[in-house]
Length: 221
Image (cartoon, rainbow, N blue to C red; front, side, top):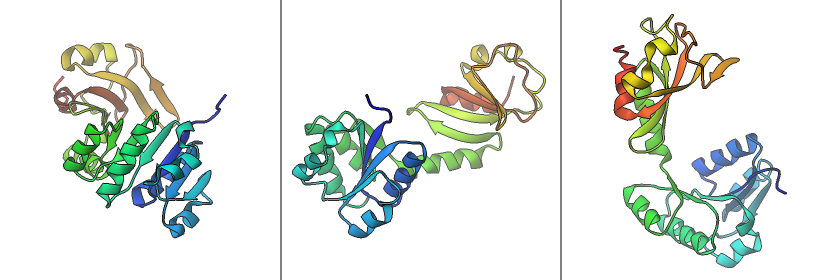
């Protein structure tokens, strides 16, 4: 029985390389693939295995037992043709999950048509997170779940401080749900009870429709 999840990252550019480091830090077994020997050398001491192959070659992928992995991330940036061909090969090999970094909307449309399980837009997504930070001094973080729904971390203002979740009735008034309250790094309440009292500057981890979250950020309670 497997004890750890196992991922393959194809393409060790800036995004793929950083992804390898982050996955390894969380205890995930990572196989890094690139056709550049210098990049393989750079990451050989970081990941579980670093393999120098051209991922467009189906036989090379089979030789490392790629079907046995939980997820393959295609993080090739500039070469759209290689990204698309590799994705197509992986899907035809019945890989469980194929996640692909998309360069633009055109790239995304092609990836959707050939069956990519998840499409990643790192630059666009980071830009949106930064925009939310800049646009509201009440929001400390933002994660997009879908086109219309997100999770935001909202700083509790004077309007919320001293009130219980039951008194605020966020779900009824704003159709949002506070799924956690962070008072500090060591004091985090997951699925807080309705009698939980909110203190000034608590971080409210809130999920909901974007338009409803914006209303809640305005704190017109």
